[in-house]
Length: 223
Image (cartoon, rainbow, N blue to C red; front, side, top):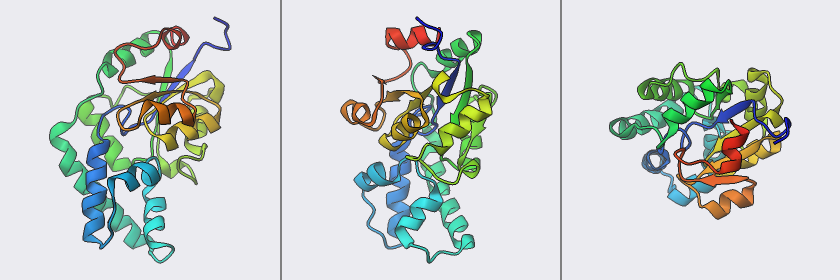
């Protein structure tokens, strides 16, 4: 394998990629949306919301009519619903912990690139025991545009001090795969939420159910 093919960094989405939690986010959106008078479907969340910042999602729902204070309040209310729903079920995707340990032993730098707000990602990484497992954690406050724009993966590469082409991105949603591909990263996609076919169509080079058995060429790139 050539040096250009070998990876120096791994950039992980959080929700649906480190944990299989998207159904709890979906349930929270459906429930909280109903409390606001919106008929939000599971399909709408999967298709239109995944990977986007709360500001962008509430912008889709309300247009430009929300004040910053109202937006912040509603975003926290929705996330509180999600945390209550998911708290009894927090667990890493199968094989994640040994995989992260192996990356560290091999000198692969690791980052999180997530649209999750700060309180959610701190809460989740601490519950998983992974608060110190990543060299950098990049959130939506660091970028102007959410996924499917490439901004957050580009920011993660900069934070790792690596070119995007030297990083492999791990994602679970079409918007996230599109974002990472646009940033110039090779993408491994997990089928926790989205079909393998849809992930491949979005540009994923590899599709896997979890981290227990990586495709041979992907394992070699990270070796």
